[in-house]
Figure 1 (tube, rainbow, N blue to C red):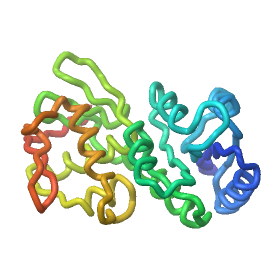
Figure 2 (cartoon, rainbow, N blue to C red):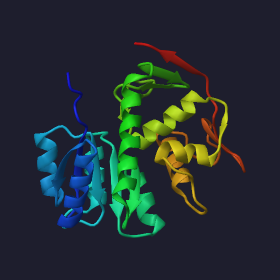
Figure 3 (spheres, rainbow, N blue to C red):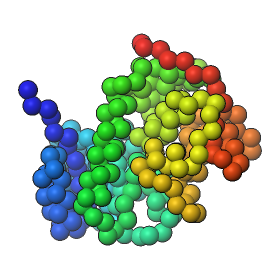
Figure 4 (cartoon, rainbow, N blue to C red):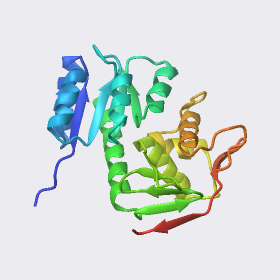
Length: 238
């Protein structure tokens, strides 16, 4: 029985870029669809299953940030955002809205391929190799549904980046994790000087956990070293 090819949706208003990425990603074994704007993207998402979205920021009509936010209202599909700007602000905004990774134009098709492969591998791992539930503090993480459940049984869906970061902390409770380790898991590469992406990712996760304020109780900052999850963690199969 043949294994199903992963389906990639490329959303970019530049036809040349869509054709280039479709040709390259198809050649390396993916099923590729494309869209030139938000309306076309929604039609594609309504008509077929998609495993990952490559989403340009600069689009006619709804921009990539708006579309990313709309997608995250109902889906945890991995999203790689493309930006023509080298400004760190664009990268931070995209990640705050729930994107899993980003690439600045111009980029190589091989680099995009590597990011796609890493995100799909991470998504597959989170679906199949973890216990169903991880319990910590007053929370329960559903690793199958990517849902964070509070003590009142209210669930919150987590984006790919939030889920990966929380899993990292839960795999190493009460251990200090440095910025490079966190960056490698959440973005697949080392952090750069003045790069706020790790801080934004941790801040967003703290918000999900209600752990904000001057002295966070769960995810503690260890100055000069990194971050630490201060909690007892247990695993439940079902």
